[in-house]
Structures are given as C-alpha cells and as structure tokens.
Amino acid sequence: MAQQQGTTAESAAHAEGEFIDDVTDAAAREEAHTARGTARPVTVVGNPVLHRECKDVTEFDDELAKLIDDMFASQRAAEGVGIAANQIGVDLKVFVYDCYDDEGVRHVGVVCNPVLEQLPAEQRVLDDGSEGCLSVPGAYHPLARPDYAVVRGQDAQGKPITVRGTGYFARCLQHETDHLHGYLYIDRLSKRERKDVLRQMAESTPRYETVPNE
View 1 (tube, rainbow, N blue to C red):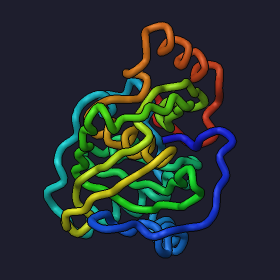
View 2 (view 1 turned 60 degrees about the vertical axis):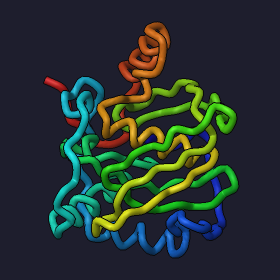
View 3 (view 1 turned 30 degrees about the horizontal axis):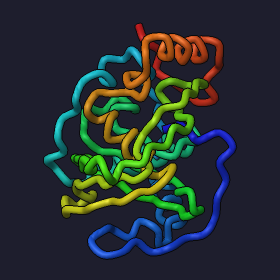
C-alpha cells in the first residue's frame, strides 16, 4: 500500500488481549528485516500475479524468512506502508506492514495466510479516505472502507496470530489482504473512477523500480 499523502506520525502503544503486540521495538524490527533484505522491483496492475488468488504459505522456513526480509526492503525502497508478496512477483499469501494508525502509533509486522474478519453491520463505520497502491504508482482515489479491521493468520514461524487495526492502519490491513486474494483497490471503484486512477498512473513516473508489463 502506498504512503498516505500528507501522513506523519510518532509514538507507540501496546496491543491488548488476543491481539499481537506489533508495536514494541517497531523501528528496530523493521530495520533488522530491511538490513537483511534486498529490494525487488514492484509488479504493476496488469501483471497476472496480481489478479489471481495467491497460494497458501505451507513452509515456514528460511526461504520464507528471506522473502519477508526482501519484502521489508522493497517496502522501504518504495516508501510504502504495506506490501504483499505478489507485488514483488511471488505467488504466496504473505504481507508485511510498517504503518501508523490515526493515533500516531507505529505498527510493524508480517501476516501469512490472512483472513479478514467480517464485521457485523452495526460495527461498521466507513472511512472514505484516499487510497493508493504501490502497484498503481502515482495514483490515488477515495475509497470507503471500515475504520476498524481484524485479520487472522500466521506469523513467520506458523504460529496463529490476530492483528487489529484502526483508522489508516485498518485500511492497510484490508488493502494487503485484498492483494493476496487477487484484488487491487481499483477493483472496488466504479469504471469511471478506475479510468481516472489509470490515467493518473499513466501520467506519473514511479519513484521506485517496477516490473514492466509485456
């Protein structure tokens, strides 16, 4: 997911209860992953790997650990707040994130095989903020999403985890989970809105390396 335009934030707080603590030592953990990783080019809309559901992660091994490091490095190089494996051409259900919520709390983590919980209608409060995507470089468009999200999955060792997000971080969790099921945020827009986003992309120059579509 692309950095929200005009977003800055600081500080931290602890997750509670069943939810993982993805806040403590966030900067140090992100730095360690990035230092071990190698940035890879980002796939863009139209690449087949972005438009189909990814394969489940079944091996929680050194190869997965290396992929996760590369994903953090790629995310930083592209100045994103989240990136899914298929955005660097890998057909696996895993995403990483380094994202602030609306209270200025920094969250850093990884989720394998994510499943987004469906909230009851009475708990849904929509936020129609602007959204961008590293695979649709240079383009943004408002998109209504719930301002609270819960994602269940596994960590890099295969342990079950639950991640909770509010505000902008909730948007990030939904956006990245969508990626791994073959959906980009523009797939949730009207045809006219999608056309506008693709026009923005065509008129911009990516600030990071991308994989050209043949």
